[in-house]
Structure formats: C-alpha cells, structure tokens
Length: 64
Image 1 (cartoon, rainbow, N blue to C red):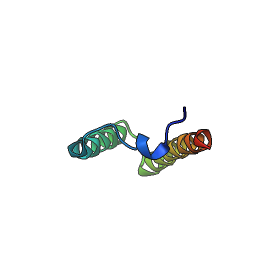
Image 2 (spheres, one colour; image 1 turned 90 degrees about the vertical axis):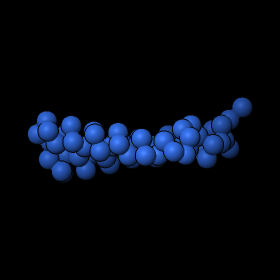
Image 3 (cartoon, one colour; image 1 turned 45 degrees about the vertical axis):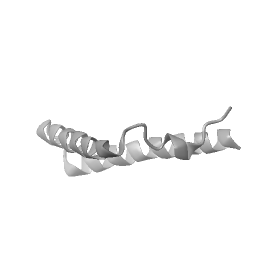
Image 4 (cartoon, rainbow, N blue to C red; image 1 turned 30 degrees about the vertical axis):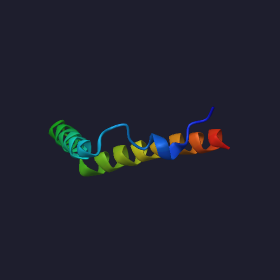
C-alpha cells in the first residue's frame, strides 16, 4: 500500500510551525557561530531541499 505524499506533509499540529521556525533560526545561528558563511548556509539549504524533492518524487512514483 503506497502512501500519498500530500498526507506526509506534516505530522505536527498546526501550532508547531512556530517550533520549526525556531529550530531553523537556532540552526542558522549555530552554523554562523561555527564560522559558516551565508553562502555555505545557502548550499546546505539547497542540499536539504534537494533531499526533500527526491523524497517527494520517490513517494509520488510509489503512489503510481
């Protein structure tokens, strides 16, 4: 049985979107404090988005 990718969007209650933003801000600050440039963080963010995209594509293919 395949899982619809749209149903995987979030397992968190709607109010936890704020928590995710706090985690992102915390990660950003940590990366900057460790000496990473904004460019480094952009590369990291792009890599993370690519992983999310690949996962969505795999889920979509499994649903076919």
